[in-house]
Length: 163
Image 1: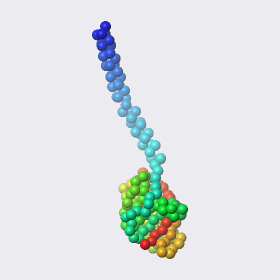
Image 2 (image 1 turned 120 degrees about the vertical axis):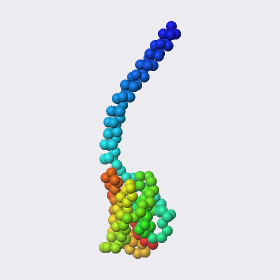
Image 3 (image 1 turned 60 degrees about the horizontal axis):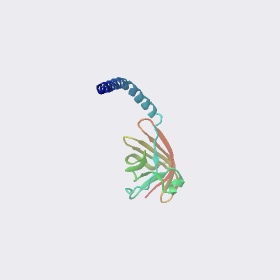
Image 4 (image 1 turned 90 degrees about the horizontal axis):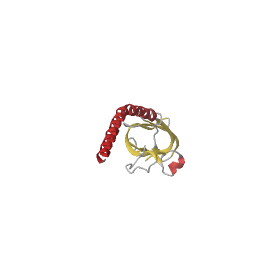
């Protein structure tokens, strides 16, 4: 009787392994569909998270820094800061990043501010118009962030540039 039970158990074990092999051969077709579905849903749902951060300690002198609103600006909840034309700082998709400014004109024409920043993951454009000028120049405008996949986010900004 023992031998019969052992034989029957071995038979079931071999039968189960053959069934697993059959399922594994059909798995690549299913996983190919899953990969295609995942790719299709990632493209339209792409968003860029823009987080606030404290004023960067790396900035020592002249700078421009912006928040999403005047209230956020007064509460020092910045979304962008740069050190007068060299390096820009932002917190995007949960990571604090420092990027080189490609171009920057701080009010060279018609009291308008324009900055272009780019790295491998983001292309950022800052456009603003002077609203008040004393020691520091106050600006209102738009910050546009673009990713290589075509995702674009536009955020209203309020802030200042000065030394």
